[in-house]
Amino acid sequence: MKAIIIDDEKRARVSLSLLLQEYCPQVTIVAECENLPEGVKAIRKHQPDIVLLDIEMPGHSGLELLDFFDENEVNFSIIFTTAYNEYALKAFKFSAVDYLLKPIIPEELAEAVERVAKQKQRFENFRAFKENLQQETLTKIAVPSGNTLLFLDTDKIMYIKGEGAYSEVFCSDGSKQLVSRNLKNFEDILCSDSRFLRIHKSYIVNFNFVVAFNKSDGVSIELENKAQIPVSPDKAQQILDQIQIIKR
Image (cartoon, rainbow, N blue to C red):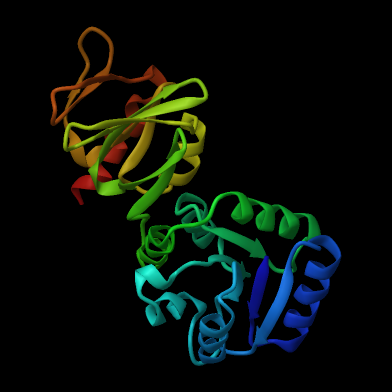
């Protein structure tokens, strides 16, 4: 596998190069670049399999790399190297984009290289990641369904129902998707957003679609599609608080 390293710090390039030589012998480094324009030229010349790309560089952000290529020209996978904050890490995770936190741990580097070798990333992964990173909330998430990655707009997700190791995602267009992520995984990613709340051990709801809060015959909420979602008794007050937040 051919690899290109793009990082403005020479020490970081040397360190990453040494780590690749020791822990990823299947990888051959064909170029090391200190800025994005050099990196673009090297990619066009060497046609690498992997680009190890720093995000924060002077002049051009690593996120701008794909602006230099048409979609059909992106025949390489990207592993971002970053010291970004927690929110950005969520954007990485749910856009299905590989990243390594600095300082880089050798075992994590080897695992990331192995992942991209097994499953080539798609242009849409990077586009979703860039959109997510530029917004205050996640706009699109990538979720696994069988051997496919589905890209779902978060503002179209009405609710999510947990089914053990799987979850069903119900969308405003009437579609539903069975995906191989448990509900806790969705809770960790989505529920920092004020739109989403886990209201029951089996349900997460997007409050933009809530139309009624019912106290009869056990507490439940009603959504725009007439779905009735049960509410855990200990979540009732939190739901009322959430409704007030959404109204503001």
